[in-house]
Structure formats: C-alpha cells, structure tokens
Length: 207
Image 1 (cartoon, rainbow, N blue to C red):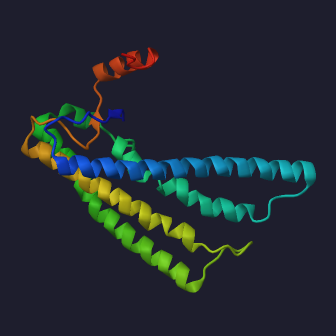
Image 2 (image 1 turned 45 degrees about the horizontal axis):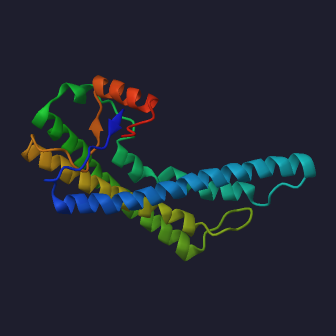
Image 3 (image 1 turned 60 degrees about the vertical axis):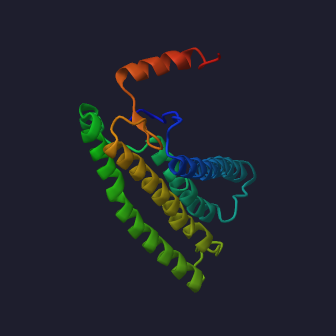
C-alpha cells in the first residue's frame, strides 16, 4: 500500500496535532533503535563467520544474542509502520469508497485492533513478569531474558497510542468529511504516485 502523511492544516485540532507530533518523535526513536539493532546483528553475524572460519573462534553465546535481539526489530518499529500506513493490507476496496464511507471503514479497521492490542499488552506484560520473577535466562550463556521480553508490551503500548490517535483522526473526518485529514495516512492515487515518482526523480522540491 502506497501512502503519505498529509501536511498539517492551520485549522487542525491543536490537541490532535500535539499528540501526533510527540508520539511521532517516540516512534522515530524506536524505529532508529530497531535499525541499529539490525545493523548490530549484521556486524555480529559477520564477526561470527570470520571468527569461526579464520580463527576457529566463534563468538560465545551468538545464538542467544540473536534470539534476544530479534524482538527489537520485530516490535519496536510497529507503531512507526502503522503511522506511515506501511502494514500489509488490501486497499483495492478502500480506493472505491469516498468521503464518509471511506472514513467509516478506516475508522472501524483502526478502532477494532485497539482491543486486540490491549490483549497483547496484557499477556506481553504478564509474560515479562514471569520471566523477571523466575530469573528466566537463555540456555547457553544464561543471559536474562526479561529485558528483551519487556520490549513487547512497551512497543504495543506505543502502537495502542498510535491507533487511538488515528481513530480520533478518522472519527473527525467521519463527522466532518470535508475537513483536511490530520494524523492519518492517506492512500495515494495513481496520479499521486506518478507525481511522487517525478518529484523523487528530480530530487524532491528544491525551491
């Protein structure tokens, strides 16, 4: 799905703009941490291969580090992806809808997952507590697993805030269909996609 974040209009609700702005900063930070995690894991994998092949000295606990680090890039950027509308979905039907019918569908498909995310936060938190109380650790190097497991409920909590903000944004459009969208990703039309590709080929707006 190709989407873009609309510019902020001058008449946008101040509270919604404020919440979207500061949550975006947190999402960007989490996405950056996820990117660094992937980069670090790549360097660790290279070091593991070179150490094993050249010096017969594999990195102790390599598998443990891989297992624990996977949660960072699997969950940390989930809210960032939701903000940009990057999650996989079928938008062919959505493109056929207009005005209130489209905003209604977007509102429902954004609001319903809130309850699922609440359940995931609850079970993710209880899973973290069990690991913390029991001193759960990896098999090889006995590295504590709770720092990795707490990433899951934290990431879902940020996603919950993003879903709430987007639901409010779509709800506003449902009430005022002619208002300028705020804090929601918009599906690009074929014309928008063509204009975007032309702009990207020229290096963006340099005026």
